[in-house]
Length: 185
Image: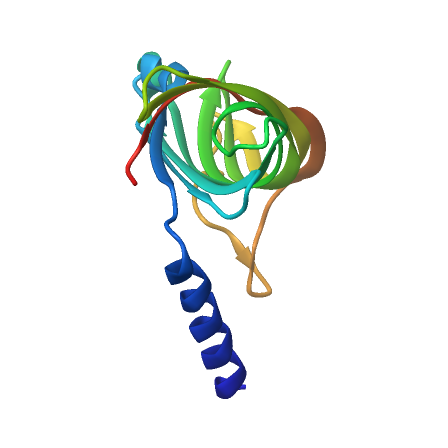
């Protein structure tokens, strides 16, 4: 098993080192407008494709009692024949931890999902792009849901598992935004 992992690492290093890779760092302006720090990294992996990873962490955006930590890996295919340029379609996943108090109720849990993203990348200069994107997907959640006056906010563990009282799934927007990206190399 160790030999297989070592072979994969060496092969991947050889592929990466064989040609110059474009790498871009980005931030979503709409999340920043809500005072929510976020950062994304995108790596060109083919003539028409990129792999990206976006992270978001927020606590009390716009003064609301919301805490979110999320990661979103995404694969993008660009129709223009050049990565990080013009129209694209993406497929991605999302994983999030959240604690939201809204209208007298508390929602404290985890969410995972997958979805599609559509977008357009507009180059402003040789290294600076604006990325317009929107996406939707299926999100599965598991959470503790209770009213703010209840004493359910402690961690209840039953038979070694965290007790939750709400599970389910929704078809929701997974990515909506305008990102500013800078090509590092």
